[in-house]
Image 1 (cartoon, rainbow, N blue to C red):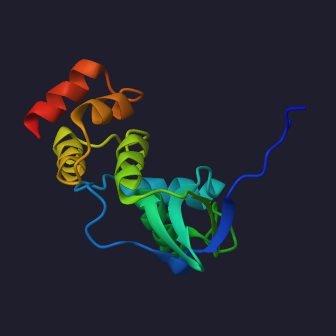
Image 2 (cartoon, rainbow, N blue to C red; image 1 turned 45 degrees about the vertical axis):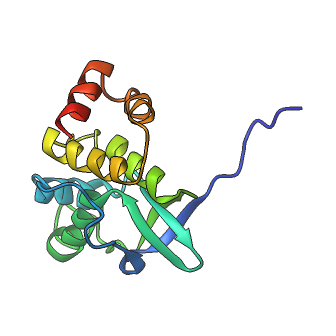
Length: 159
């Protein structure tokens, strides 16, 4: 019999314990993080971060803007009128068992959400994948869920 509900790897992680790997994020323009911080301060975290868990360490894969916004929300907004009264201490993180290649792909796909990655940022990530030896067809196939194939091939041509 097929399971109706399956266990996930959703974790509650201490905000200050999430490791941000220097140079991993391809995003150069974080956009209006303050507006996101106000939204989170008013409503709480709505979308989990994604990270790779190794023992008691969670290294961020996707959600760099959200993580920064939660820190700003704690510093500037939470506890003031119109916002949540208690600071964000723990955050929801989906723990994924990904190798470096899949972490980069996940970052590129996840980064296409509320503030899409620029073409320059996408090319930076694609170059990283190519340097890892990832086949061009695999990159197009993987990004095809978010980008048209034509756009994916154009980004690959630039890379």
